[in-house]
Amino acid sequence: MTAVKSDTTRVLIIEVHHVVAVGLAGLSNDQKDMNVECQADTVAESIGLAAELKPDLVLVDFRLTDGTGADAATAIRQLRPETKLIFLTREDSDAARFAALEAGASGFIHKSRAAQEVVDAIRTVADGGNLFTPRGIAQLLNSRREIEAQLERLTAREKEVLRLMAEGIASRDIASKLGISYTTVRTHIRSLGSKLGVHSKLEAIVKARELALVE
Image 1: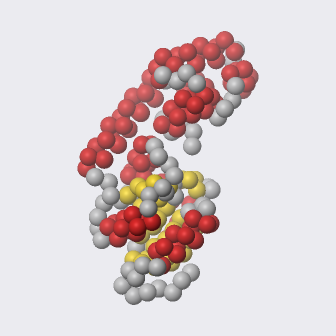
Image 2 (image 1 turned 30 degrees about the vertical axis):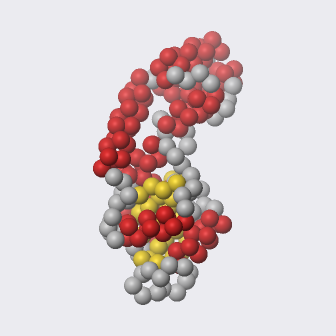
Image 3 (image 1 turned 90 degrees about the vertical axis):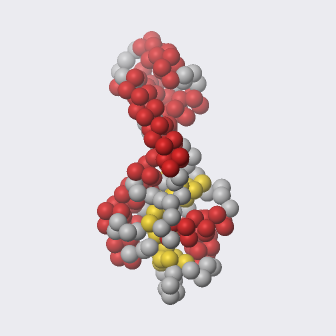
């Protein structure tokens, strides 16, 4: 933990990769108006630190070792509604963005963005701004409705088959795992192809992530 500077935005970093966390801390602490109070890499730890340190802003990754950044963000907002949240992650799906928005985040930034953009985002959100535009929110809501409509078209068994396909499990092994015939698995895969346009392992992975059937 570093010494607190006066008149600064107190930042808590939630990041599973230590090197990235250290880099973010150094970047923030180089700014006169920011101070990193502490770092965490789990949902449980981040909730405890947020309650103890009362940060002004939390910079959170989406994938954590014991859950998601959305889990952490939701819990932190319940403890401290005034704390601002920004997701900084390699995730690049509408499902992840919607989860962040639903958890109360004011921004969602990909880790490929320039360092100065991250600094500017922290300042904008700390000052009460929101990185989600009305148009962006509307697009996410439309995307969410489309995802829900696609899920409603699938049977419970088709969802299971898609999830296992996305995990790289072969059709015969899916049949064994689910206690059904190989022919039945092929029938489900054909149905998924018709309903969702899934015709390969790669397409299955992409679609399953879009539908939040796998992480």
